[in-house]
Length: 501
Image (cartoon, rainbow, N blue to C red; front, top):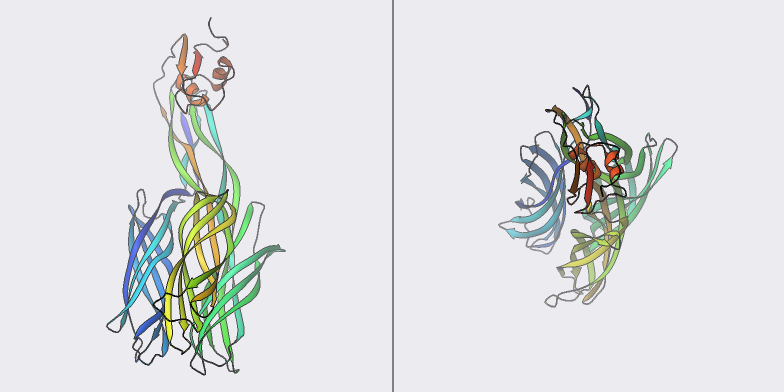
């Protein structure tokens, strides 16, 4: 007997989990500035590294903060700072060299002033997937072992393939009447359309820009702009490539006072990464047996988490927020920001849907010019135009928020980007090896077996060392799934097709 092996490069799912990590830090005030109170905090979290070791994944990341403060003279200033997190995630079956992917989400954030510092406490949710794509040795065939009955898997295999990237620079001037100083600026890119073109892709998108600046009267103004962009990316595509997606990454940007009066200069550098999902059919040996019982198949089970599609959809939401009774009424809205948090995913009439919280901060001025802030957690629902998948990873990107109103009730318009990756979980049984065993004669005569729950024609034939074709010829009308307790007739000699009277 000679086993013949080959190597398969399959991306296997090793483990997955969602854990919470506590983040804490102290941020000093800039030299010469001392904060009397905090008006608002904008945050962004990213995971920088994920290292696998025996039985765990080490996550390292950064929580970035823009903190709008007021000094003793009620003058606003912005503090840009960051704090690091390092968290160990225990996971079974994880080994060094495996690939871990961590999607972080900021769940809770609290800041307060302590001894001329901003003390930060946060809770992040770390969604972790660990995969292994090292070549897997599997059994392809066995020769020299007589007649074997073999069973094969035919699996529709899908993989994500990187296609390349391209750089894009956007330079624009923005109208900002009376602008004298920029306190903060945020830029959020969104890809709206990808078209196939000759030798590549035509990409269209929008930069959602938010700027908080002071004018000549020392008033704070929020500017919201939408800047469209287009870019061609040269890529090579083949017939296996489908569901093309573009992931934009903002590398760096600046927004400052222009030489032209009442204008701002914006410079942004982006990197656009293209990927597609490839599909192919994989045929592998699952099981085999011999009628004399001289060869035994050794099997292994693996789990594949295969991508179905990458989705980016806009979710616009309009809500009314009420200023708390203990605060004065609004004369005008100064600045609004929000942080979305995914609470859960669910099936909405066959579509993928989610419940989320929009943790909103509003800074407003009274009619006398005094600045106040309040926060509210707004529950919302978004339904995507994609089929529901129990295996999905969803992230929310806050693109834009606009608020207006006086008195006690404010109107707020949110624009969310919902980024979803859907997967299918596939259990795959592979023949991993073969071992020789002592041949045993089959029992002679006629037997009637009662099928257990979940039994198959193949399993019954293998157990009694007959062929599947013989078993079906002795049991006319036998179909899968076989009901529990079904009587199965097994004969010692092939060819006899009638039940005994």
